[in-house]
Length: 274
Length: 66
Image (tube, each protein chain N blue to C red):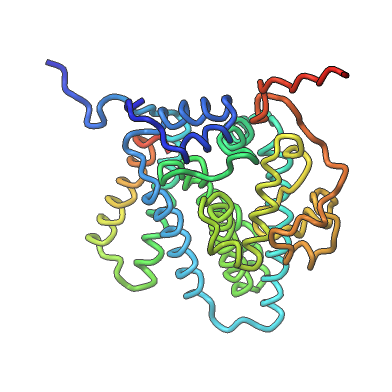
């Protein structure tokens, strides 16, 4: 505490934050390394990703028309992979991958809830962006099918695959940033971004986080696999924006837990009958 | 008198950050070498610079507990 009196905005924010979330944020921020710098973290991810895409693009010679088909295939596969890893690895305690579960379900989802889903400053990027070795891992994983395509006589398809996957990873990080940025004056008007922002904020609702809204780029897999909180088609999902008229009416709800800002609020006494 | 750590001694250096730092350093160096070869600038000086940059990035990831 710095001894200053909190202003009205700060008081309103504290009211929104549950005590549990507030305590978690304070504890997490105290543990962020002194040498950590949020914008350096972002620059590293986009610097490595951008350099890799530039290098892969320079290797392309003369792709046949059918080699370009790898782009939509990789896009679809990445969308399902993003959905799968979020649903079954990041939200499930899997032996050997517990670090991912702890970082995501136990940390990211306590730091950001549906009541307070935005970061305050660039040091909070520590819990918004993946560590840079996630990008290295995804590029390394993509090298395998790319190498197979090259061995089968489709080297340009292999390079296109690497470009698509790396670009989608950067797309994921950018959209996730847009989901948690406080000021939405710009992002609320950008197609796709406004849809995924509403989609992801709804996912931060503790009641539905284990079963709804796992996509973080384009909510296609969520729509196709029935794990979206919306009841509409793929195009409707992609261009839904902030609209809540299509939200399922029977979603699970959590009331009066420690995550609920109303927790601890005394119930109004029933007025005695005259 | 004990030396004062540069970071003030308050950095948590977890094993995951150390392994991640090494992985990123290897990845950055591999990318650096590939790009240097592509640009036909793969002299010893350029490779040494790549090793330095990759090493510093890996070290930062470890010490910043990223």
